[in-house]
Image (cartoon, rainbow, N blue to C red; front, top):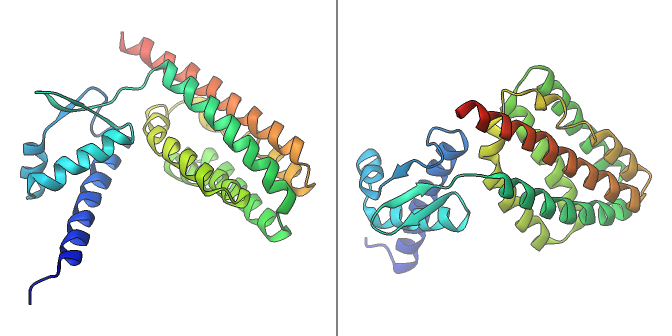
Length: 227
């Protein structure tokens, strides 16, 4: 029996998304390095796929900030720079600060318990230098607060930015910053527990600023080592 047009479209979209997910993960884990060129032909040969969903996956990753499509050269993994770090944390501080202020008004005791659990997991991962676990729980902690805010647009914007930035976190994962990444979270939880929106916003902004300072320092250190 032939597939109808909606099934064909859904199947094709799924294939594009699978290719995009594979490449995104390879970029995040530094298996494909910043500045490295990848071609449709190479990916098609590696995975036995036609070039159309690969081309569409490239465009999707370009829109997400992972790739740059250069005429006659193909796709190049986008490099991160100091301005990327500054811009990322400026946006993150404003949006997550607002989300924390709104979340403080409506958060329940059960939701506080969930945040405390994620915070404990982060500390355990940091102690074991478990980068993957730390990053996962760190993002879940912040995403949980974004969801409590109830603004889907803010959640989507921050989630997209964080997704792009995961590769930078991996890039500096062996550094001493792991023990500092969760340092303000106890204060954030305490402010939310008191339903103090102004303090929750202040603590969230401080956390973003700390993240920017730590990662900027590590980024510059790694760049210096490359020279």
